[in-house]
Each structure stands twice: as C-alpha cells, then as structure tokens.
Length: 482
Ligand SMILES: [Zn+2]
Image (cartoon, rainbow, N blue to C red; front, top):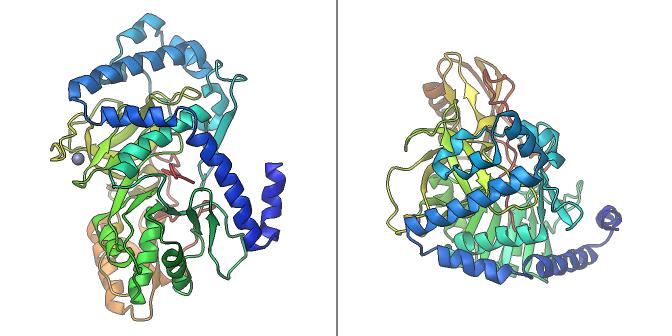
C-alpha cells in the first residue's frame, strides 16, 4: 500500500502531497514519540549530569549485556567469535578499554549480508524497520532496528542534540534532506512540503540554486521553523547563495542542528549571517551506533551510553588524543542489529582538552576529520582528507568539488557567481598544490554540482583506488529527524 502511494505521489497536486505527508507524519509521531519515549528521554537527561565513574559503570553493564546478546542471538557474531576462539566467558572480561581483544567488523560484512546481523530473538517477534544509506558509489547499507530501538535513538538526540541547542523535537522545525518530497523533474516552486502533524517543513536538497534561493527564504519566513535540521552542506550552500543576493531571514530561529557533512567554522559563520542562528554539529550514522553532539561551548561530545567510540590505528589499537585514526563504533541501543567494533568509515581524533561545560563523562572529539571515501593520495603518497579550506573566503565561489582523475591529475568543479575572477583560480590552484604537491589542476566552471541520489553533496571524488582497505564507501551520517 505504502509503495503504491509512493508511486502515486508525484502525480497528485501539492495540497494532496502535503496531506499525504501529514498523515504519514502523524503515524510517525505516534509510533516514534509514543511508547517509552519519555522514559528514555528522562534516562538521557539524568545521565547528562553523571560523574565519569557513574557513566563508566553504566556503560560497562550495557556493554556486557550487548556482547552476551550478540553472542547468543546474532549469527554473524556467534560464528565470527567462535571461529576466533572467543567463548562466552571471554566476553565477560571485555571492558570498553579492552574492546581491541575482539575483531573489527568491516562495513563490507554488513553491506553484503545485513540479515546475519539481525538478532534471531527480535526476528518474527517485532516489526523491523529498515533504513538505507545512500550508496552513492556502491550497494547501500541496510540498517535494521525495532520501533523501540528507534525511540531510544530519538530520545538521545532530543536531549543531547536538540536539547543542548536549546530546542526540542516538539518545536516547529524544518528539514533539508534527501527525501524526494519534490518529485524529480519538477523545477518550479514550491520546493518544500508541509507536515502539519509535526509542524515540520521539509525542503528538497536537490533544488538549491541561485535562481531558487528566494523561494526557500520565502518559505522559511512563512513557516518560521524554530529549529533548522538536515544536511550541513545544503544549509551552507543556501546561506552562501543568500549572502550573495543580500538576503537574510526575517526572524531568528533558535538553532540549526546539522548533520551528514562536516560543519566547519567557516560554514557556521556563513550560516549565522544569513540564517540568523547558531549552527550545531551533530555526528551520527544511519546504523545508529554512534552519536556525537555539540555542547554550548562548541565542543563535540560522544555519548557512550548511545554507542562506544574507539579511534584506532591500522592494527586496531587505540591512538592517543590528537592523533587521527579510524573510528570504530559499538552500539548499545540497537537490540535488533547490534554492531560491535564496526568500522564506520570515518577518520577522527580525540581532543586532549576537557570541555568547560563540565561533561567530563562524555568524551570530547577534537574533530571528525572526514570520510575515508574522501581521502586523496597525492603522487608522493601523502593522504589528505580535508579540503574545505581550498574554497574558504574566495569572492564569488559558491561551491567547489575536487575530482582526482589520476594520481597527479585533478579536476576542480566550481560554481561561481558572475564576479569570480582569474585570481580566484590562481588562489585555489596554489592552496591545493601546497597540500597535495606538484600536480596538474584543471579548474572548470559548472552551473551546478550534481548531488548523490540522496541529495548529498560530495566534496571529493577519487577515481584512484586507495592502497589499503580505505575504499569503503561511507555514505551517510544522516540520523535525520525525517
Ligand atoms: Zn562541552
């Protein structure tokens, strides 16, 4: 039935589309914010004020429970651990610090056989919800959870993400995300649809362009969402195009809580100016095995009661603070599909400073540097993953994308307004070569940079295979409230 309605959606008028979205919104709200949702919210709030020792004890108990559950009910882990000679008693001795005694779970394993990760206990007993990552360069990841698991994920975000930003899931909100609310092929406004059940205005991530910016601004001013959510890069693009046209919002939203792409300081500044609100970074994943959220002091705290994060070197051993490594996640909230030491595909580093907010029990990430799929290896073997600085503070530059055609040959796609100059090209070329070395750089102007099939912006595309296992495609950090 749902599939039939989805097929019908593009052919009905906007008012009927809004009605359809609202009916689904009502069902979504009843299911996800019902049941034990409030109880879970209270749990996260209480743990927000705990000491490091209290949190450590809690996380240890939860970890032991999850490991037992995985051993007893999840075919993938039972088989994998037995093969590695790990028995149930060995699992009792595993602490968050001793997780490296267990093997890493590569993303390819989840991708190739997601059902082997589903707990037999939940199968057949409860309805399983399935979510897919975008799979922009391969087979998508299928993440599975129960409705109750989902309530816990949202409760965590209600407290640690929206709550820290001074707002709530119950506030009127907007979303820029990958759902095709505006059917493909439609190029005329409106570029949003309205879900009255949740007072949520949902914008298309696919239609943000200099010609369409004013329609987005008009809709935001009309609905006045209190909190802006969704793709970080889409908000940044919108804000940058607004600034180019001298536009700002008529009102001040309480916050923007943004995910999916790295949110840099420069992006925050542009968003603050045009959208008149502070942008908070949120780091999560469609697999719901990790959550890191920004506090009032601007630091990114990991919630270990959501999922344990490890940052490790190529041998799977922890790296010290300040050193970049691969992020591994162990989910504590997903009963249906527990993931243990799951290699999510991102590179990050711990901070060696504590945060003035005082939440010493929620470890601080220096940053999530980037995704492994965004790594570029230069001719001298240097690996670089950060490129946002190439395009910062350049007049007329609205978007840039780097494509590695060969080890020493790059194309840079630029979306610019009319007044972008040759000096801008020279600056981009110089900045790029400073980091990558002496390579050939071809800069071309394009009218737009195509999005992935989930509407996401890809800042880097490399056509050169990486020497190690880093060709994994991490396609989403979308824990969106959609
Ligand atoms: Zn803090």
